[in-house]
Length: 251
Image (cartoon, rainbow, N blue to C red; front, side):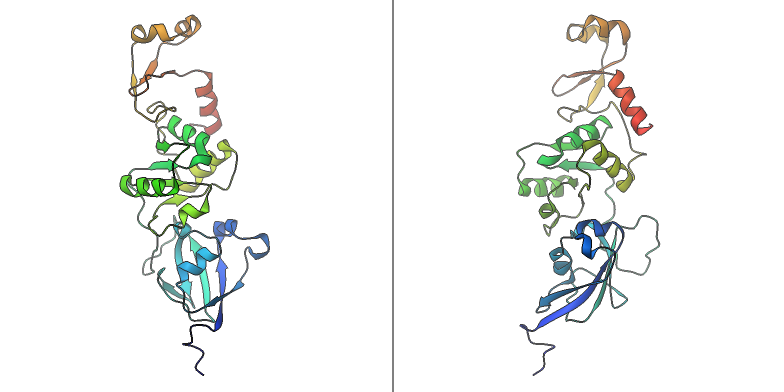
């Protein structure tokens, strides 16, 4: 019997994941080749995600040394190398799997990342967040509005339609922010005090006389520069919390 074409024969391929892709793997499988079994001729994308690595994190796949796309079907006994998004290496001539970076960096965050969304808004990033978004809503909005999905739920990043997403490894909001800034190289895009941290609408500079009734006497004495949200009318000024954030991020 010719086992190479039989759909029910157990086959296997040897996978090696590189760099931060190992964050998704169990400790015993990180940073070394491991064998993964399968039946039939599944796509390499399906087998990568079967090992809990979202396709949105992958930029290059080599099978037996040759560059392939996500649709490539494995038949058994292959050597598969999987690489994360490259920022500086020249991959000319290879099959890049990630779309080009979005021209405008905008986010949508899932229910677990409310504080991260607030920090991103403080830095001026257009960031949608609601604690009742369904997974389908997040994916639909991200595709329609060209947003990067931020999620602690790997299942969302495995949707076939998703093109841009990030899974914060840290669980503390400030560490998540720092991690995201480094991973997506956001440090040149900060625009503090341009967006409301509460509702995500734009801020506008406003004379103190127009919002005096919103302010405590001490605030009126020590601050002269004020901003107000166009949507929810929240008033902001560059108080101690702003300077602490600047110092923490050194901006």
